[in-house]
Image (cartoon, rainbow, N blue to C red; front, side):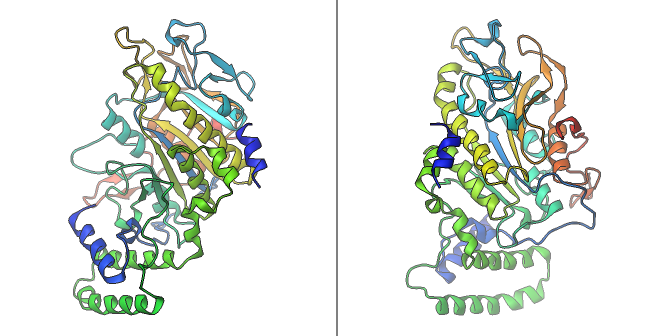
Length: 434
């Protein structure tokens, strides 16, 4: 049974560590990551948003470098294709590799960017460029795209975090030089949801409120002596955590609230359940949700690795698109699938693998005003060179920002006074909108 059928059948720094520990001891709370996130009313910086075709983003990041030839830019008949066959999809004239039979049925909703090209061929540098739109520098930490989106567009639901990363890690770019209210809330295991988000046993509401009042009195003198933004932000973070704890929106993080049939449709793997949680968070007004999948660095036994890795990706993505569409959410939700670079068309003789290849690779866009069922850009018959529709990583970020109505020319200054824009010098691919 297809995902579509199943869905329809199933009706940080020592100071932060100190603050988290203080909250745990004083409130009877676990050191939840959200304690260190500001409620963040929109930080619009005094500019006007433009027309938007999308309201929120689900950003799927495949860390390691997905082979474009073995996924969304197959080369049937070429020596570089290896043993992988191409299959037809629901989009006329658009093929994907045989590893994606479920996603093939959803390709009428998807635009493939086959002309992606990067200047960075090492993982750290490539991932940083893809996540921020800027090259890695030792002198500055740039904000991630999710931080830019929340600073410029603001939160949809002030009770919920504006930016959530599912399955990422400590090395994932987040707020950069932006204020701390634009940090992302990281959730390592989507199946576990938002842990330590309830009062500890034995702490009733009255006791909890007394402890909050005591904390406010303890902090009052310090805040009056040091009325700095960073000091105020930490108080706001505690307030944000309390609001979420007391909110009905907390259920958004609980996958157990989903019917068993829908949970099964996404698959039991971490990635599929992350996609399901992303859908729930979008429903509850989270502006930017990232789902991170590791393990795509296939230097050795590329084809064996893909046979093991792709089923979860195929099923999770297909179900996410079908589910969002069935609920009427795909029109306003931009789904992005990105990776830091492709993999070499040449297959290594010694270990049947593919090496890093930034010159040409593929990304996907769907929903949020994007024309589905199209391929933008073209590589040559072997997947080595971009022949048409070359798209840089800043261009991809500019396309996402354009869909959200963000002003691409608006300048934000770092604390050192350096000017930055959301997509650097990138230009949106307007041909993708229809």
